[in-house]
Length: 81
Image (cartoon, rainbow, N blue to C red; front, side, top):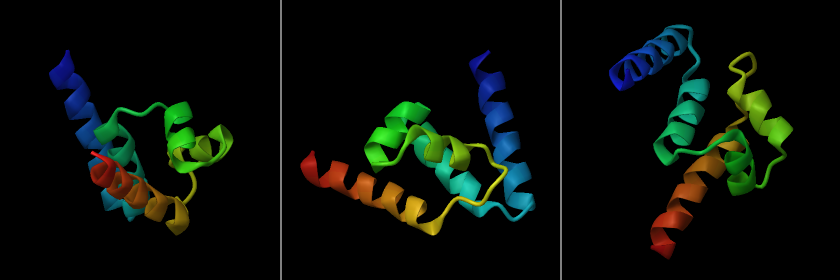
């Protein structure tokens, strides 16, 4: 079952990449990499859950500021560790 989930996730990533949605792929990978729910991602980035849901919907472009916040959050976690 876990293999099926990984296959489906990879298929989604490939479809988004082929449609020029590198922004959505980056945001999805960030959330999955850190195992964050929408609520946890919102708290981590200092955004509302609604804003994060908007980014996660894949219907709209993920703002560059959100992608930069994801990278900054990762750097802060590394420095704190």
